[in-house]
Length: 202
Image (cartoon, one colour):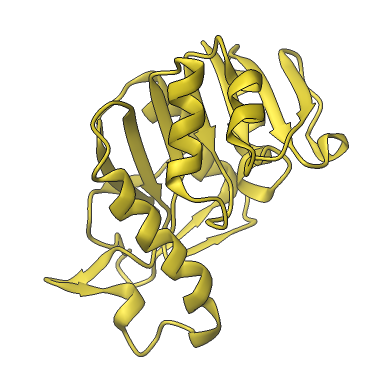
């Protein structure tokens, strides 16, 4: 496929870009600092500011899908607008874990354990997901990671869920960036969560 990655120089974006390239996809890797994008066969680094919907539309035109690994300072409407202008039918989003449920009706965001300093950024993720849920034209997927996403050795395995936090036998919710990238590209290639959110953890 032809895939455009927004935020391709970040931790999640760079791993997703590498995973796409390793599977033979053609990648337009977009970032404000394209020199930080990992070099790989099939990857074209491009400078771009995702807050400029018209400019992004030009960069992603001809893509089969866009994967956004941006922070939530760029609203959903901006990204969706770029896809519609460019005629790209599909959007996959690196989401946040804060909107996952830890008990029926109880979000991770609202638990005492959720760090207060993370709440302003996490709130953007909650808003982004709610905006996506109103979208009917673009085929979107919001991929929430585990509660902790970290730099760990690639295991090549993960377990998925939908709206509930996935935990292991010890009650921990973790995944590595490289395995998160595997799950993202698996969803790209074999869609199972059309206009829906899913999550993954070990």
